[in-house]
Amino acid sequence: MKERKVNLTASIPFVRGRSAKEALFLPGRGFRRTARAQERRRFDNAVVREPSASLQVAKRLIDILGAGFGLLALAPLLIGVAVAIKVTSQGPVFFRQKRYGYHNRRFWIFKFRTMYTHLEDQRGTKQTTTNDPRITPLGRFLRKTSLDELPQLINVLKGDMSLVGPRPHVPGMLAGGMLYEELVPYYFQRHNMRPGITGLAQVSGCRGSTAVRLPAIERLDYDLQYIQRWSLWLDITIIVRTVVREFFKGSGD
Image (cartoon, rainbow, N blue to C red; front, side, top):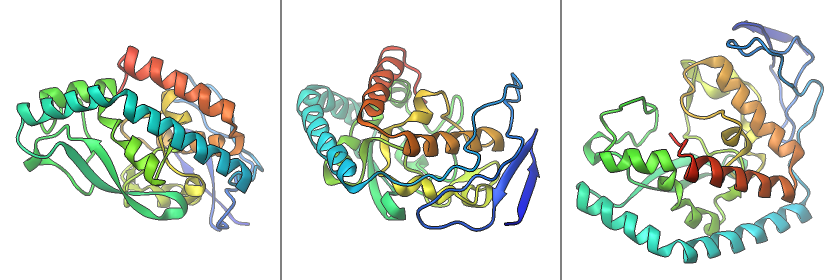
């Protein structure tokens, strides 16, 4: 298979062909973090497949129980946030947007609205920036604490999402100034599992803007690493780390 290299700060292997169920990583020199110049683990010669049907059933049952309990337990908080949004800015409580789901199927994702209605970007092609004028004062708090993501528990109950998994991207998402699937030809393999409210990439610090190519590729590697390593214990670990990182430390975007 022909190998094409893109000069970022180190060699990044790419594959031109890919199957519907596999993500292939050709042997290469790997890549380095530009700040620390440290080698990070890659999936050289690895094949990433979605978990077996029985494991997916178990994961789905946990999702239903977890999302149902979460909606009931957090109902007062959800109502309070909804009222605050209506009081502080004009427009609907929820923001809906088309995202990629399981096996590339598209679905409507739900979030608490954090932007002024007339400045919203439904296509999601323009990512938020520091001190973004489109975001309301309340929206900044919701994003910092990740409370804006809580309505996605509804998506989990509907079967569009999972509690844990690769974060759902908007179709046509850009990475390093080009389409994500053009930057990384095996991009769509991240959809071999349902997208999640949180994921391994997010708790590992890979979140925010995808304007720089190297971190964007690194984030995708974490998504595929999650699919390859998936277990119920890994999901529990990610959920605990998310609660500590997002709600207590306020590291959301």
